[in-house]
Image 1 (cartoon, rainbow, N blue to C red):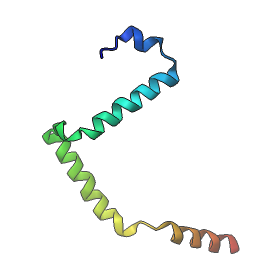
Image 2: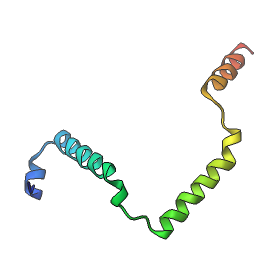
Image 3: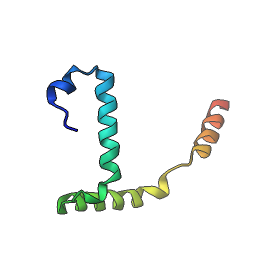
Length: 74
């Protein structure tokens, strides 16, 4: 089924967003077909490395809640 640009532009913004969501979900389902460039792979690796460095300093939500409650008491 082919959809023309004119057909898409006749849709409401909400309908176009729904169409976009459907298209995005279909792409994500077939993501193994998407090539990753060397530059993208390096950026992914850089982000993972940065995450691993920052991870020990992150707080779980319950810890944040305890600190906030303690700060309110003072």
